[in-house]
Amino acid sequence: MRDVNVLMVDDEFRMRKLVKDFLVQKQYKVLEAEDGEEALRVFQENQNKIDIILLDVMMPKLDGWSVLRQIRQMSKVPIIMLTARGEEQDELFGFELGVDEYIAKPFSPKILVARVEAILNRTKPKQNEMINYGGIEIDVDGRTVKVDEKPIELSLREYELLTYLINNNGIALSRDKILNNVWNYDYYGDSRTIDSHIKKIRHKLGKKGKYIETIRGIGYKFEVK
Image (cartoon, rainbow, N blue to C red; front, side, top):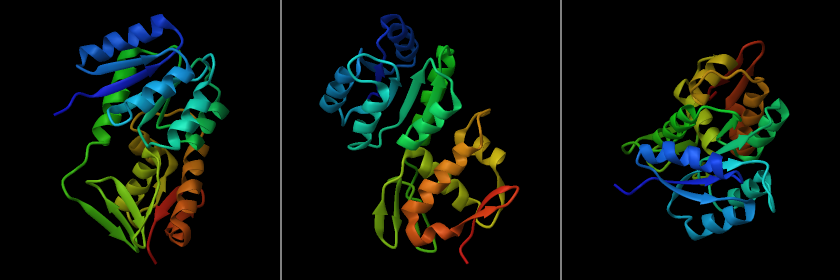
């Protein structure tokens, strides 16, 4: 099995070293970048090797949002945003751009490493499992989604949310339950995070988006009628 490579992007040397030390203890290999421009260069040079990116928001030359946008144009690699700002609107903005996790500084390096491990475990392919409901086909092994045999692009979080809804076909799921199961940790932000993801998934599913039904006062349900 090949090494797991993490790209750590932060303009603070002490922060990079702190996180790197914890990741190295878990046998991860760490690539570093101290600004946005260097981050893009390192990513482009190692695109097929990098498994996950830890990306700071406030950086010189090119900020994290700009880096995120450019990476998302060429890759679906999992990205955890690191920021000193904990504003709810910033978090929603990050998810809109395709962030998989969002951690506000200061944070526990142990918790950050746990989040990295959780995402990497969720992105490991499973054994030849296929899900097909009403023309929405999910290849669990390849983590790809097709609608009427045409592939669609989903972020990691969108993919996990869609598969969770489909695996609970016909069951009304509360927003709290969705957050706890899909986000995989206690989430204290606004439930609009889910609404934002659902809106994007429906759009990408096209006519099949109607299968995701809003249950007033509760949350959402996936059902093919």
